[in-house]
Image (tube, rainbow, N blue to C red; front, top):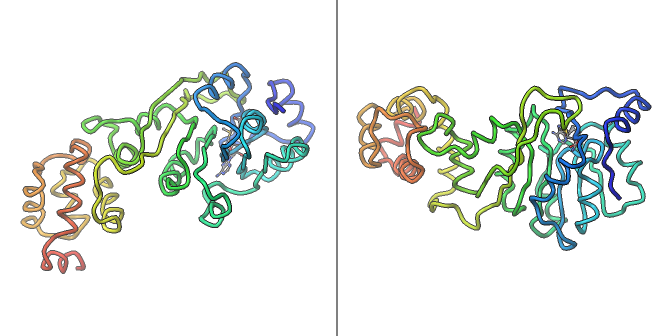
Amino acid sequence: MDTFLNLKNLQMLLSQHNIRPRKELGQNFLIDRNVRNKILSYIEINKDDIVIEIGPGQGALTGVLGEKAAAVYAFEKDEKLAEILQQRISTLPEIKIIKKDFLDIDEIFFRSIKKPVKIVGNLPYYAVSPILFKLLDIRHHWNTALVMMPEDVAARIVAKSGDKNFGLMAFLFSLLTRSSVCYRIRGSAFYPEPEITSVVMKISVLDKPAVEIRNQKDFWRTVPKLFIQKRKTILNVLRNSFHISRETASSILKKSGIRPEMRSHQIEISSLIELVENITQATPLDLAEKKQ
Ligand code: SAM
């Protein structure tokens, strides 16, 4: 059953329940059915698939996902919206509305699912970055995601090294996924109309990272520290983030083939990986320096 509501029916339902869209929860509902159809055309879902939907709202996508998939688990943080949608889909056993913040999804949930899922969501603007990092965190549990987000966030995912937008997000997404922008959506497709343009992104998890990561634990601990002071030279970033001397930092950079005056966004991904390895393989003396 298609649970999509056009503007008139959505407004009627919201006013019946005395609800106003909550900006603080990023509630911009999709109200253009043609746009909805176009969005869903970018992902293949069949009866073997289990789908997790992030923020179903009032079901603009949910019903169709339920028609196509074996099961849909829809995580909705707004309890009232979740209850109303639950009542509307009560005859559809394949759709489970979970009254929960998607950011709280955990291993216990995935243990019950047992196979990689597909992720779909018109993401709430206020939480796009944490949700994207969460998706990377749980990447062993899904293979394809189709997500809507503001255009500027998408630009930070697909940026190449050298671009001003290249940062931790682009580094991790290019290392761990294949991501592309499929479609731009004008603000008038949503109610209330947002001031920004949204895009649909398709993200596929790579079977293994694009460049080999030898020491996983050190890698995840070290990488974010390289991107926190974007305007500083990489020499100073190393000195500040790892509490090492200028000499040690210079020699690590030399070994990694990186010029000390570069900024982290200018460094190629493979050189960044080598840099991380050289930092973590620093001499025992340097390790002692790190602890200071
Ligand atoms: N999917 C619906 C649509 O396209 O019309 C609603 C999309 S709206 C942009 C975002 C939805 O995510 C809202 O229903 C909001 O309440 C919900 N939401 C916000 N933060 C959330 C979170 N952390 N976890 C789960 N849902 C969330």
